Length: 487
Image 1 (cartoon, one colour):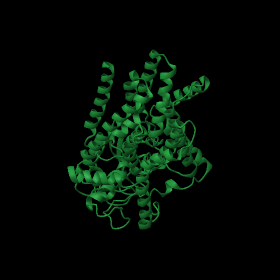
Image 2 (cartoon, helix red, strand yellow; image 1 turned 90 degrees about the horizontal axis):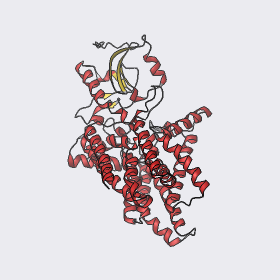
Image 3 (cartoon, rainbow, N blue to C red; image 1 turned 45 degrees about the vertical axis):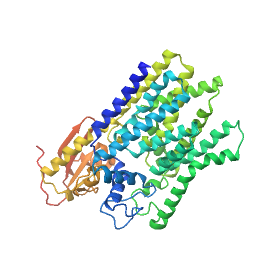
Image 4 (cartoon, rainbow, N blue to C red; image 1 turned 180 degrees about the vertical axis):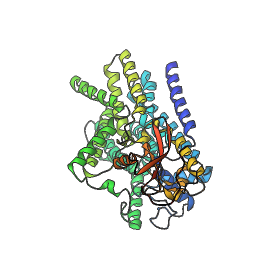
């Protein structure tokens, strides 16, 4: 019990320290769009319209549409109540971390021996992608929490709790809708197993009821959205993500990306162990619990879904997309460890997994290999470098109209940092200055161009840890802006 309390305390301290260190960090990665921009629409218009229009919107605000607006609405409401501050959203996600920890602990009590629950909870909560999603206060952290709550509600047959969990799961973003469908199918399968392989219509309808309110809400939302605004991807920068691949090579490249995103950040250890225990379970003819069988079906359906996207889309994958299925895989693997290993080997295996997850934050690739920076704590120095970079720009009176940049650095600083003025960095590379960071994952051709001293002049470099930001002057641009001294 003392050791268990120590582990609970350790995980709590890690999350508290991360929250304190990141409490005033600006919006990062996709949160700029999915949280801040959409929240600004409701905040600035005082919730005038439920839909973010394609016309007559404040400059720089746009909506994806296929993501329900729940995240933006909750954030805007919190700004109205607590103040227009960065810490408000970060504190909100900390609240979800408490809920996640409680529900995982409750669920694990059914699946594992009591003496291993604290250690397994530690492994799950310190997984590098999940921990990084907490650090950046991503909506996917809420999605994952809602998914875990839903699993617990299914196992304990709590219909009210399941109704709430499904609502947050499906209304946070479109991936949550996919997760909700897979959850429902697996829930029916779980009921089928509990009924000894027979179908009971009355019970099947009963477990369907918690899903109906969210189904009605989302059906209404998507219907009215399409009537009001048309198809999601018309005139959208995201439209290319959902086009068919142009060639067989593009499919192969997409498949490699899918595989890399699945195993990176230390996940590969879990994958290797899972194959080993799958072999052990089959060979020993061990009977799995109904819960684990349902979990396995979910895992197969999740991976099958994203594998389909490999062949029918150009959608870039991120490790955070795989949080639900990786959690399921982790539970299966840890069950294998506690089933087939001796107590001494169990602790050694658990320590190996924690080590792999910790070193997962060190998976930093060369500049020409795209990296989902929001899935590693290795990105945390970016915020200080960003601040230094813009302080330098302001101190040298560089006109923002002359600046372009890569992803995360371009856009209106009002929506990223919540400053009370418009300072807009553009994304076209043909302006006088370009802010280049390895965070941005810019095209290989542009990286090659920066190495050409006849085209670009390096003005200033900011570097800390794994992250750098460089200011380049475009020598092929004929505008009469001054060259900033690099000293």
